[in-house]
Image (cartoon, rainbow, N blue to C red):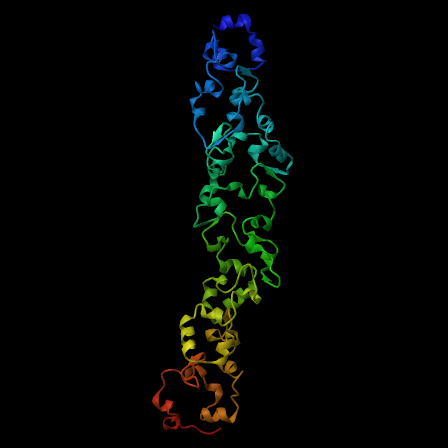
Amino acid sequence: MGGLGRRCHQLETRRAGGAAEQPPFKDGSCVQCHDPHASENPRLLVERGNKLCFLCHPDKARKVQFGHAPFEGEKGCLSCHRPHAAKNDHLLVEKGAGLCFTCHQKTKEAQKTKHQHPPFAQEECTVCHDPHGSNSVHLFKDREDKICYSCHADLEMAFAKSTVHKPVKDGGCDSCPNPHGSDNDKLLKIEGSKLCGQCHGELMKKVPDNTVHPPFAKGLCLNCHDPHASNLEGMVKEAQGTLCLKCHASLGKTLSASKSRHKPVVDGQCTKCHSPHQTKLPKLLLAQSPDMCMVCHKTLQERMNKENVHPPAAGDCLICHKPHASAEERLLVQPILAVCSQCHDVKADSFKTAHINIDAAVMNCRSCHDPHSSTDPKFFKSHIHPPFAGRSCDECHIVKKR
């Protein structure tokens, strides 16, 4: 039949100078596609439209969730392929991305960007996209992250951590970078914190009179956070104790030279007390003292709710204690006598009489008194030696008046 076809049909015209030929055409098997007598289809085709192509390419007949518009349109396969021969591989009517750009003009604009994704720059659209149809959005050949890992194999294991950024976890690699090209480094759609603000807009909203963490105010999100995955809560790049001390180096020196250290500081849990972003309170505190302190010191809170409360303890814990570390025991701001002397005149006659003239310098006020709360009006501890409770100190002590 091939010889018969040549009598009427100028094959060179159909070949159009193309080196790539459709196998039936090359073999002269015209009747594989055309009925030699009559047909209900144009050009005497044995099947209409794509159904003809599916006779040899049954895999392209699969049902997909997202179909390529030209492929599913009236011209079908012939939107992109020539039926007999072509100058381009796969019988394409135009070479490479030039064919795609006939429809995707907006995507072509990415060629003008400063940074381009290598497959896009090399016009290899089918590295990522299936030109016939796909069960993934944007005609991706697979789940997007799987496609990305085909080139970025090292990242698949790097992202296998306990906390994964939601776009990464959902396989939405194009949530942050533009997959074709961008004027920003790393193909990012927007620079800096504006990109984070697309999802975290409420967190990043400016609030008048708020205390704002300087890196957060400057939009330096990546100073603290890993944008992809982390084994640490909050997706921080390093443990808080290490991360925070990079800026707060003086606190690190204080900690190393201190006698007592606050447990959250030792454990590197800075955000138990401070907001890493912004807050209404000074020093980025999450709550005011003593409410902040009672979040951890629940037993003390229960006692204070039932007993007489020492006025400083009811007001501000920082009157007596340092929040991070101290050269004194129990995080005291000064030696205990100096702390108590802020309110109690240890030189007054009434004080001397109450303490049977013992020199205040040798006292440890906590030996007898509870600094926070007590059922006793003088804040004596709950368990008291009977003679002491009866104020009969001279039964045991001989004290010389000074």
